[in-house]
Image 1: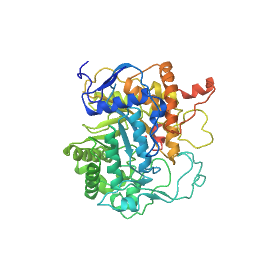
Image 2: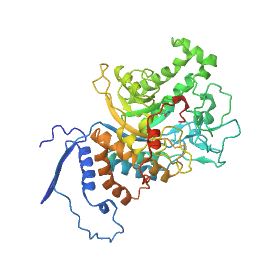
Image 3: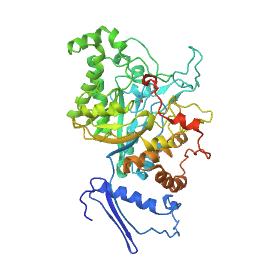
Image 4: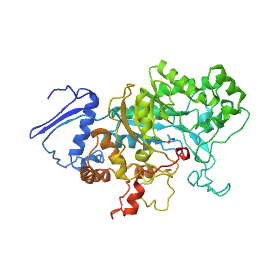
Length: 475
Ligand code: ACM
């Protein structure tokens, strides 16, 4: 077989009694093929050899095989929220290794939010000296409050930021494994940490704000005056310096517009730009940021609040409703499927959260992730493409590295299979997962242990997609 049709990531592997031949049209395809070889070897081959003098005596056998393998979709990822809880660079590198093992190729880092700003920006040092640390953290889920004063807080400061060298090092580490790091700096909402550092970027320049200690949607958002445009350009300039990814994520979700409606400055900006209402400043500001990225040869990405709200040229992450993905495709947007009912791995994975607080939302069990949402089929008349899918781990209730493991695995295996292979049967998947679980164990992944008894009918009823008001989402 020739190399034609293998694309960027496909590979061919032939193991015969005397040779192993791996073929690809592009070096990335070889990386994918090497992961298949690792999986064909005994599980202990996954464990790095110990010690310098540790001649390994194991003799490993590969089964003879002939494989041609190309991915179903080009975007197969995991989003890690490092803003709600900071996770260090070692932890991220470990996840890159695990992503590569699963032939996932995007690590989307949610670097900034109301509760913390994690990336240094030279022109704005206070983003990390002030914005990276909050005084305490809410211990209840957002929306769990009865009345003011009943919410629990842990009264422990939480903070952390990467150095620029850690981020560039992570990018290089990931690139060697064929994984692209897609950065996300949120705007115009979810910016409370930035406003705590630089109040003049908000709609009330004289107001002192703390880095937010609650979860949920905060109504303080960026202003729309010229200093904010300068800030956006400076931040994105540094983001582009550090992250060579063709895609740069601008956030864009959950942005209350009340402050703009009440601000004479914002209303004047809306009028000057010919917008019919201050709420349209959301699309205007995203559009300005997106144009800046495009002028520099990058593609802007944003969370799609609906199928129609993003400026042209944006790649849409459809997270609320599958209908939004279809609508965005019709409007010509490329789409990454990130629907919360099937890809949010911070949601409970079975009916027994074991006493720990979890993100409010439907149960997203292994089967739900494996099933996913039906992919929009026909080519969209507007020319938009489904790029692929990714899992999300928001970290309000995931402060430790062990939490990330437990939330990601094994559910991420189900998403990885669907993203690389396309839809598969549950029976085939679970058979493969049984063997694969031994690899996860060999690698020390602190995976979630599936309940040993089959779920009761009541439990499976709860796994059915359930409607929930999107505005209550707590990211
Ligand atoms: C989101 O969950 N707010 C994208």
